[in-house]
Length: 333
Image 1 (tube, rainbow, N blue to C red):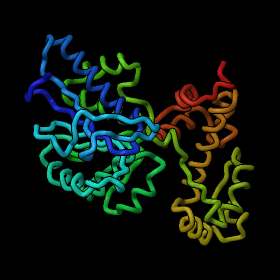
Image 2 (cartoon, one colour; image 1 turned 90 degrees about the horizontal axis):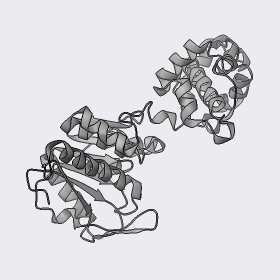
Image 3 (cartoon, helix red, strand yellow; image 1 turned 90 degrees about the vertical axis):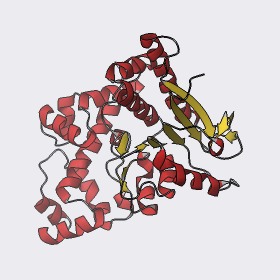
């Protein structure tokens, strides 16, 4: 077993966690230790990984209906922790929830890195560790996190965010992105790259979380203006639509239209239109055999250069890479 000079990585599992959310980071650090021993010799004091429960009960029911027996409880840890990674968030029905949050609030400032993966960001926020800090979570939980914790600077675009000694990661596999970044932080890019190659994953995944979610909410459910206007916009998407034309269709002056549109969507008409063009282009890239040039023209994105620029701005990924990543099997060649 590694001694106290090793970096102790404690992955703490909360009830309802997904197995991959725990197993991904655990494998990253475990493989990193193997890489370090290959490079520096057997017994190199790199990482020691410990799986801990968040409560006194070491048996944890996972989201997949499986049960996991943790090696220890976080509440029993009496060794210096280098990196604490929290997984999951369902503690409400556990008898020692208050003990967990008390432990976290007391010990987090003394731990070099404290991380929350996916919905565990909510746990960090509840513990008061994210006040006025940038944080991310799963892209589907953006509004919920911001509503419940308005003092958190929520940004669910990146796969992970570091703010001081607090780290947060987006969806399930983002925990692996974060763990690789931590290995690179500790031992350099070459070691992290070797681990990524061993696991057959990107060292730095292209794009961001927005490539997995929509750029626009379903405004038609809450905005009478969009319910009326969006079908017209889709019909004329290939054209050079301007604000005056949108206003005329909506029977408003351009000035009043822009004001009402911004109030109902939080976007300017031009910004909304650009996001809509990207959303429709994504659908074509995923589900059609149209060429990139044809898609750019059909969506009013100009040529390939223009469409690439817009995709990189919104998704941090090129149209070609997006297609190769998300194209449905039905249309693969």
